[in-house]
Length: 141
Ligand code: SF4
Ligand code: SF4
Image 1 (cartoon, rainbow, N blue to C red):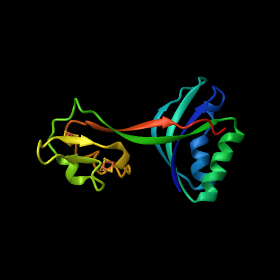
Image 2 (cartoon, rainbow, N blue to C red; image 1 turned 60 degrees about the horizontal axis):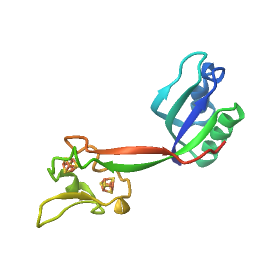
Image 3 (cartoon, rainbow, N blue to C red; image 1 turned 90 degrees about the horizontal axis):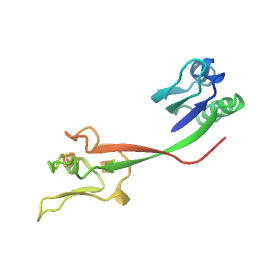
């Protein structure tokens, strides 16, 4: 399984080789998306964890046993209409027509309810008008 989580560390925890132990003891792939960890200070880590389900759950339990606060992240796609230059590139990649072109007006629009977060559109946008947005879903301590 693969999931994104945010981990909050206390000052004492931030000194420990936690990532190393997740990789070595639980065979998890740790893809760090964002981090702010400083010695002897509180910090956080936004990461994607990937591995066998049982190992994944053991790894999360390990984090919690250390007192690390672990919260799941949900992701949504955001389209910034003001940054969009209406080039239409994204609409040709989008498999669900969440991003689409009106054939009469030739205007691009985004329907979030159709988006399956396949991320196909992210790389093709020349102005970065399409971005992933992460939200903390709630405490899973
Ligand atoms: S993430 Fe996928 S489904 Fe969503 S808008 Fe982009 S291409 Fe379409
Ligand atoms: S690729 Fe980017 S700039 Fe082009 S239409 Fe899509 S959102 Fe707009």
